Length: 360
Image (tube, rainbow, N blue to C red; front, side):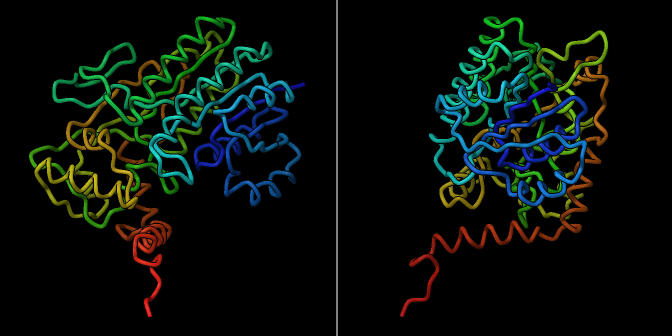
């Protein structure tokens, strides 16, 4: 029997892409996807993958990781590798911050409890974020994995990620026999990335904070999937792929450069005005413009990726600049993606009286 890999968060694009990749990995016999709903790619990709004799079997289990159900799933399929991707800024089908926090934190606690009771599990990979370092005016020029933030994240997804990493460290002490990898991803961009920063970059005009031009790093979605694959499979000879790793493309860009490459005009505004607009966008569900996103677009953040390169032996194929260039190509040099336009139109229609219907 080969590897049995359980993947949480398969409904989102990153989870779906990872499932496709790991199914083609030699030595993997079964991939179990867990989420509240299947990926939009599942049905389309299943027929193509089933035709390939080398593709591992895929089973989707509709389950809420906040419930003990996942423990039964692990026992039923004799899982030996767990890849936890269901730690995210938003939850598909929900606009409730409390629901997202429960999924991120309580869901992770339940998952770790299930892994704790599963003697066959030998590897755990957890998707985290460089947001755990925060964004503050007195931050160091470059964050390494062992550094602590000047100002701890006080809320939102960043605080969720800090709590999740704390629980993972506790689990690692209780189960030293399990190889644990925590991957702190920079902002993921690409043609299909469904992240808050990607939504921000798709705006026709980019609001910026007057007097600030933050330094940013990106990781292309293809590189993110590849790093996840390397973390979930056998490590290089002489390494274990365990520990905490910053994951980002080489190089740095400032926000004004990114805006020019995207062909987006910027509107510099005083911080209170931008904060007010961000709050309005969240309330109307037009954009997930969180306070932590505001801090990033004010002070920026840059991380060191030496540990990733030395341990995994992998250098991201896309630099920060190239990752953004691929996003530019996918949006046809500045035109809004049709899917984004359709999404905004639907949200605006929901806010109108009678759901956007015509009054008589």
